[in-house]
Figure 1 (cartoon, rainbow, N blue to C red):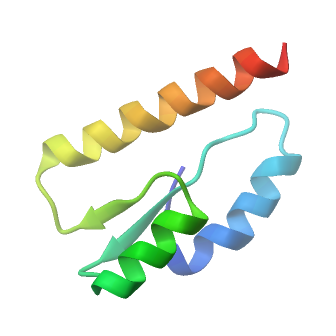
Figure 2 (cartoon, rainbow, N blue to C red; figure 1 turned 60 degrees about the horizontal axis):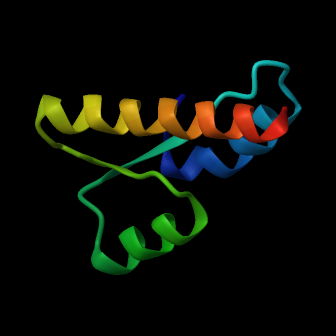
Figure 3 (tube, rainbow, N blue to C red; figure 1 turned 120 degrees about the vertical axis):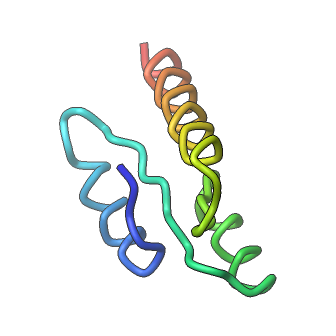
Length: 75
């Protein structure tokens, strides 16, 4: 799930209780270095906007790989 970084923390809490266990990918718009570092520490994935379409797809691929790894470890 792509979400604004300001909403990502509360959405992640909701996602933990969801049956499908979605992965939250926070999106930051023109972040400062400090904002980017803080978001990357809190969330493993981060999407910076604006960016090229390939970066959006790469972030989605990473989220799907993370989700697959989490599901595999739960089994």
